[in-house]
Image 1 (cartoon, rainbow, N blue to C red):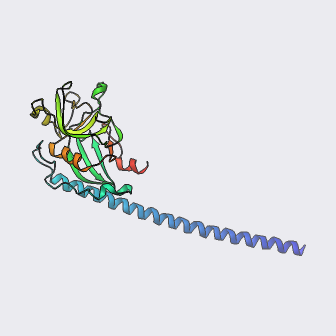
Image 2 (tube, rainbow, N blue to C red):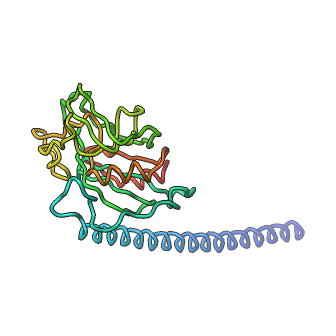
Image 3 (cartoon, rainbow, N blue to C red):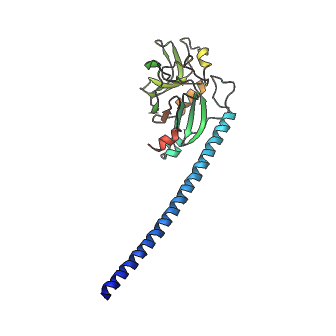
Length: 244
């Protein structure tokens, strides 16, 4: 009986010890996780602050009044020659297209390097299929050129870069007529608010200033990521990209 009692006490002591160790281990793990969450929250806050600073700086240097020939900003275009080779997601160059704001953003990871005025058809209810702007994830394609004219649509453009359909959907300049003269009524819509009554009829392509369209054609290679938001996005596209 004494031996059995001793064994019971030994087992009890071991169990108490294990319970104590488990409690300490769990406590330390919780502390470690709390510190990790705190550090990430601090990094997220710093990132958000930096994003806002960059956008504020660019807003101060947006071309006013808008000139369909010139770059959208008075600041130089970003040098992306090295960044386009990046392997890490947060260092890659990509394009964010916002029909809601009528802007195209040149981004590196979460940060906006340059803001471009744009004319983008919004997908209002009952918009005809051939006038819809494709939304979602795309990549720039190798098809690009200095100019085109489409007699079926009655306009052409300069400096186009395909992002879908191998030339069917493009980043391109404001429209030009057959004689090579800009269609000013359409060029004046660059960067302006779009309504259902006065929508952009660009057949799904993204219109930019002549200078901005040329910069994209010259500087961003095929396979550069493009994200076209819907009319009223609820989340930042960068958060979506990180989860892919």
